[in-house]
View 1 (cartoon, rainbow, N blue to C red):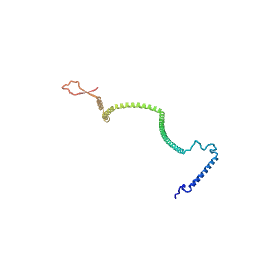
View 2: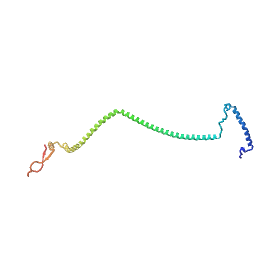
View 3: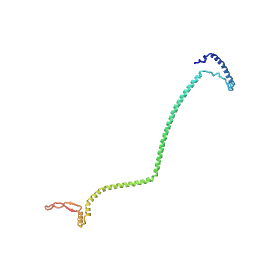
View 4: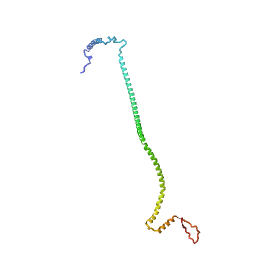
Length: 223
């Protein structure tokens, strides 16, 4: 069931009249209360209304428009500030990262310098041993040079060694003859004569060829 609005009901006009009648009473009561309060405009001798101040219903609209414009400008400024703040924060963060990376690089360089200093201290501690090593290296160089000369001498002696081996091979039957055979003075004398005739050379006889002479070569012992 739908009820009609209250102003269409019967007796609404009377009620409006009654409300109008009651309004002055309420206003009067408010005036009385205001007169009784010590902080009223009358007690402070301040007029309730100024003759220069006039009420204009359009002022509320203008004030609301101004408030809206102010709110929009504040929002725009806040958004701008947010963008600027975000960019500044990013730039600061990038700068911090760069500083951190540079600090890490400097720390690595410091660690390397510390390691190099420790190595240098170790070398300084071993300086006496290094001096001994230098003396030993000089001696080793002299030994190497002597070794080179010895190698050259050995190379020169190599063909002589081969000749010695060949002579030993040639003298082997003589050694066997001396060791195995019985001792015979006549045989030893002949062997000595053969050794004396070594070496020999052939010379052409300085004689005239005759029909009765033999044209052979003569062998003469070298004295």
